[in-house]
Length: 464
Ligand SMILES: Cc1ncc(COP(=O)(O)O)c(C=O)c1O
Image (cartoon, rainbow, N blue to C red; front, top):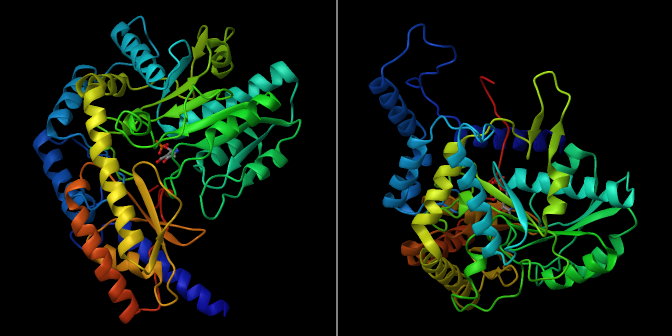
């Protein structure tokens, strides 16, 4: 049995390697600095060659990629690239040298606070959703230590919440209570949350929407729990970013999720996923990466995020988040994208993306008896699992991969999810037709494997 398991693990490793590492004799590796610099033409040609070698990564424009690329169209790309170019060497660590970047950063935060109904609140931009979440965990930890004397902090996190909460807790030495979700609604089980709260709890968590199956927790009920226990409530809107705030206006039924809910103390919103609501999105290559906002109910709470060292040999050192130097170009790109899109642009994106997501969910529910949809996802992600003994959902995923779809495998239960972006919208019918074919193939001609790998993020390999 052990041999068999080892064999299968070896095969899975090879499969992953094949997916991630370009193979073949013609592949040149640049492992040390060239002795003299290359020309810009050579650099662009080499990059084009790398794209050919990793060809599966370059096909995202056809829309068969779940999440990963949040693209707003070629015009928006041009706007963002112009902003990058203009502020290519800027660094908000030196606001006196780059006052325009400081202004744009403050305005990004202000626009997000208004979008999430807390104009008098406070916030900070970070490098991405993970950093926003880690900063919020740290803020609540330091707040609880200062105001309540908590020295053994704990957080209560739905099993469906993003792994960034576990990561932050691991970095900051905080105990995590992982709470199961209801198997039908896929919302966090409130009784379990309530039971896990104790005098060391600093914060509870809800998602709007979660990564694995796109469902939204009951934020109002979580807010009541947070308020009653005088603890923080972080609502993770990294994936909901600029979709969920527009659901109401777009005419879709929605539950409150933002600062209008009493008890919500922090919200993370990924500005790199909103640059043209998921123009193309698939959890890897957004329009560009590296910008997110962590918002707090008030400026007082935000002060617990800051780091200040007044006695450092290099002078007084103060910084708002993990990074020291930061790329001002990303702030400029985000600001430019938000100005370009405007409320109307985001609303239009919301309508088309959510319309397509709901069409996929409805067709699976009414027209594909072998599958069921997990919960009742309100926005841009839909996950589906098998209810047929002869249909292995991973095998369905494998066949979909062969047909060119890049979907995400999730676990507990084994399921596959698609995060719809604007690129997916025109290919919804193709997706459904391919899915039906894939089920037929997996059912009539099972490979007995189902090796679709639940791979979302991974560590660097080869060459450091
Ligand atoms: C719900 C949710 N939270 C947090 C994150 C983390 O964001 P990032 O990958 O920008 O660190 C993601 C990423 O997709 C997400 O879907």
